[in-house]
Length: 96
Image 1 (cartoon, rainbow, N blue to C red):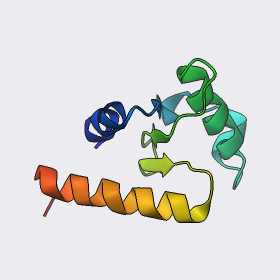
Image 2 (cartoon, rainbow, N blue to C red):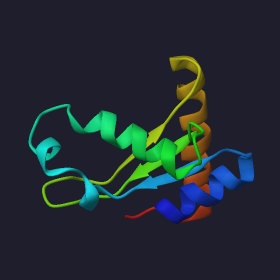
Image 3 (cartoon, helix red, strand yellow):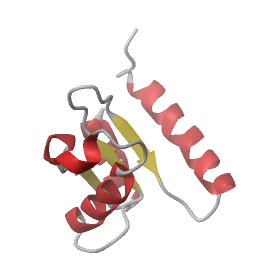
């Protein structure tokens, strides 16, 4: 999925980054909601200080992989996620 998202972002002129949860600080791993600030900082750092349009968060022990799409407002995010979903479906990469 990360490779598809990276290519999708490149095709749209968007910044993309990957956050590897294996490097999440120990003191944030178990505290509900604490890791998000670290993840956002890591995503921005990985793009040289720019806010990525999409960042992919890898899974880790007890954590599922997550993709986050950013936008100026909820409507824009909803429209873009629908376009992204159609593109993914059309790519034939869907898992069954």
